[in-house]
Length: 430
Image 1 (cartoon, rainbow, N blue to C red):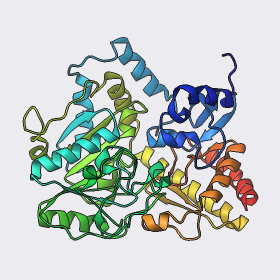
Image 2 (image 1 turned 30 degrees about the horizontal axis):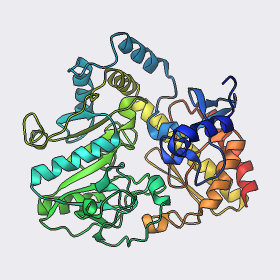
Image 3 (image 1 turned 180 degrees about the vertical axis):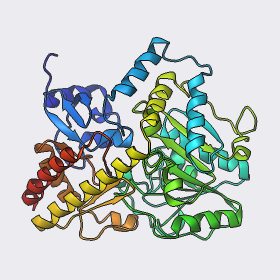
């Protein structure tokens, strides 16, 4: 097909890919309409197959932080590719990126690389169970930790759009997806976010998004993360920070540095791959020593430590100095303030806020503090905003439970252009 259209490509995709997409939120199911198919990207922009350019606030759901096709990253990947794309054997870059993580993240002494954030959280939980000899996992309603079976219970992100009538009080979990046996989540307990649960000696681990970014953007309330750490220490459970989003974005050392709370294990992804598939989990050496080949907890992966992903990750981390984090924070604040001004000027009951350098949009008058409140977002209103922004050349995530990402490529001028589009969009949606 020459000069394909988005509509024609989506129709073709639907014939050979379930729902026409390889990740559910991309189908535009919650906002309506036909998804655009990306042909290329550069800096803050996406260009679709019809040649239309959008300012991108999706940024591969946070994996892109330096801008699309950043020359430093492209050069690193190109050089690595000339040496081969996969070996199934150790490489120097694996050591270098592990050293970079250890240098940056408080409390981390050793790192195991994997191929995705889902794999990272799944493996960290297995490790915690192996270390403690316990089975029970505690997670928080609305936190999303990937799509492994044990974690698909009251999850955020696009899972939040599936039917889920379970209580968000402390209770045994029910599966959040068809195909997940009840027994798989029988040892998972779901509790409300921003409330420190009372634990007992059956709990192996508590896993948490230190900044919730899959039920909109919900910050941890003062004392919440420190309280979790103390409660885990009291009963001998391990605290896992899921930093697949916040890692190397919230701060140089991620949310552990940003919050001042050091967890036992950290899971990472997105930024450390520079846009290529990667994940990692990390922690103290005494905990990580339980992994094979040293210990009895098995974990493996043919593509773990992939040479292209580690090259892209190292190149990306090289760009993230103190000045870069200052720019990211200032950009996020400028964007959130501009969006709020646009909503207020139009008299639209929507909220924009920033935590670290993440930006959240909530379709309601008061920002949420937990999953129950997050689910009151007006998804229809968000869908109207989404399409009005898209018509104006700005791409938000096609779902009300995602966040917006400012990157180093989003200059003040680009952010002001986004805000100008938002003013027109907000005036048109109600």
